[in-house]
Length: 491
Image (cartoon, rainbow, N blue to C red; front, side, top):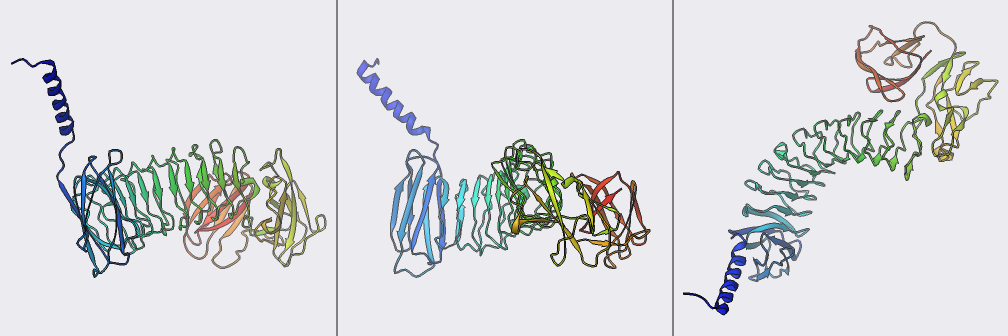
């Protein structure tokens, strides 16, 4: 039977409606149940559904049943209900056809049952009172926010193989199990947590890492080559090799125990904070850098970079920079690399040097010592320890209370052979043109010798009563023995 135009148009309209109705996949009934301890009377949360125009039903413990329909744009529903005259703990049941996410903050949640919503992709429960949480079978979970749950001591993320964001910050005592299975992870936030010295080698998709204040003393990020932002502030790091992180844009590694750091391979760095370490050298690329904080280290002016394109540059104050612990009368103390600098000025500026004893008395140039282009020669020995003050227009903030000084050193009468140590456990040094000899009397120790540009020229172990002889070209070197630093001049 043929349809007339009127009936044919009506048929097409009905067919179009049916197609639209059936275009959304049918979702199974999902159920999420949580328990609150009653510390917060108003229970508020949001539920995002997989499909729009989906009804979300909530049963509260006081008998109230609330419903809301998710919108078209964000598929979001929001609930807030004050519970009264019902003894705690409270159980809240949420049912919906297909749940994409659940979020509730600071509502006193102690338990959550997710067994009835395997399809959930995002769970946001910050600053709750969670004591445990079962995440098994949630293979579609992509985002998990549990920061601030101080009572949570166990977390198994083994099944979360699609997880992209994990936040467990401010959760002291919590160490996630199965983290190495989360190979899709892009963002890991664990500041103020117990995730100390983690093995992240399997997390090769990481782009953002925050391990601030986690007591981390060692970390290997060589496999995490996609990292763009790294936060390692306030830890116990003495070394950091970040040479493989070619895409690194932001690095905060302030508040550690670093003596040297080489960032010459991180040319994309835009923001860098290395303040409050023990840095004696700083090897960085200024090409992209716009913000640098390198204050509160032991950097002489020769190690402080020029301003370049830096819009933010904090180089002050500095702790005392390292010089040789002992200088012989008539032999040079070479600070020639500090004799001039450009710094934040428009051109090179000469450095003014002043020598003080431990009581604050200034020595007389010409009578007590000579200084030619930063090379000091002392005419006599001194009972009191001395130090050198540096003043330059290249770095005008290094003045007054932020003035730059060297470490204290002793000027002694000439000796022969190996110099005497300060204590029985200190190493002996002997320098001759092109050679350095080191001897120990206490116990074996690791030895690293650095040029002032941060390059390590020697890495070995020295045994007691077995002197180490190293061939070195003329110049100034930093020798690190068992974690203790010494500045050595090779004539």
